[in-house]
Length: 341
Image (cartoon, rainbow, N blue to C red; front, side):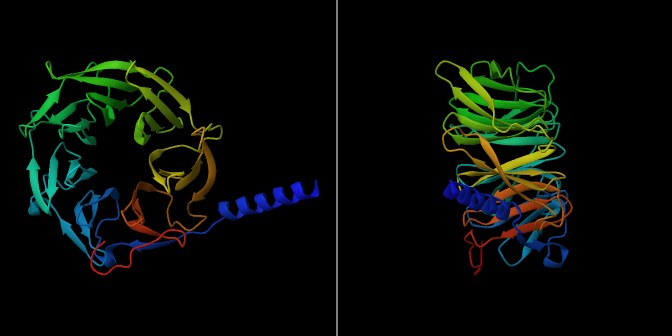
């Protein structure tokens, strides 16, 4: 009995130590050459550079210095809402005022058709065929087809705002709107997306992120109604949506996105509460609260717009007003900068 009590005390002390852990960051801002402190998206090119999307252009970081690109350098627009890396390593930039820019070998190509794309790009995904798909805030789905043309794809959505699209297999996509989640199928003959499944028990909340766990398994993050695990079987078009974390205290509010770290942790970035860390249950897939990264544990601000892990294991935080942060953690291996990221 005494041994059991002793073990419980040890485990409790370990949990308290983890929950109260302090974090250290390297902050990058104007003094380092990063002129805009509002970061909307992060990604890494195949050349190793870190690319940073802001409201005032694109920055490229080589580990030592930042290079700034704007419309004067052939960007379609300055305001970048999202950055997506395709299978070949090229980068696709979605812009606030409907434009798209393609980046390959640090060269920019404008992709514009105002008759087809006339709203903010909210997400980007790539199908198995190599075609690029874009969702827009005004509810449109756009495909950049094999003929290198932007084409609007009619859908069965009824004027819903679309915030997330993710290719899952063959002609199937997950589509998240301001209050619904759908499985949709692309009909090539009619060039249209049709609803195959409307996830009935998804709560009315904006779908902010869809993260693949493994084949047929996804985390779905709502803006303010919690985190869910979606299991899909496309052979018989069936699905199961379960709540991954029962949020009874309003902890998960104003979620912006998430990142799977070390394969067994989910870090959820928010506007207002910093980062909330969860352990992912091995068997159940449920989430267990494991700690916080916020102003009480080392952050200068709790406004975390985006998270990104580069190929060397560095964790980067894009802050809304706080510039770019790199987490310094003894448990994470970092590249010793010698020229490039």
